[in-house]
Image (cartoon, rainbow, N blue to C red; front, side, top):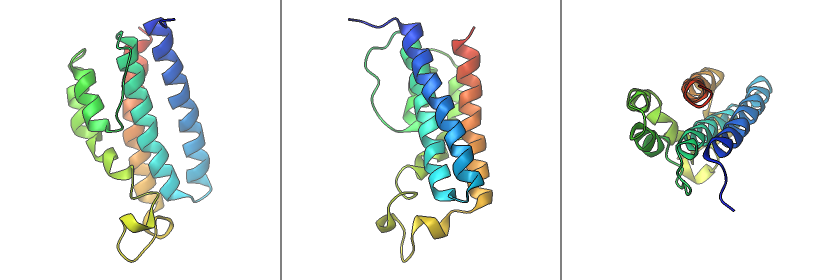
Length: 135
């Protein structure tokens, strides 16, 4: 059974918003590396929400940059967003795996300042997607 595009987009957006609440708990608890990873996930899910809402039935991939380019095919505002949030892709792997960082671990490398900035980027994505989907 094919899902209604608008409903599917809202479903993905709801999950992105729930993840944002979780990211705040991680930030407040000092798990900055995990807050950074979840920030990337928030942006990824929000962008997928927008793309699903446009009628796409299969949306794959994890790259915020690539998903932003795809979303820009439907709405040019996502091209401007792409430039601002593409760095989120750098938080997909190194925030989770020690072998992604030379001689350290993610729990030691990521700081409050970094996590706050990364969450600010994910908030930009959430804001634009909310604005576009809920029109």
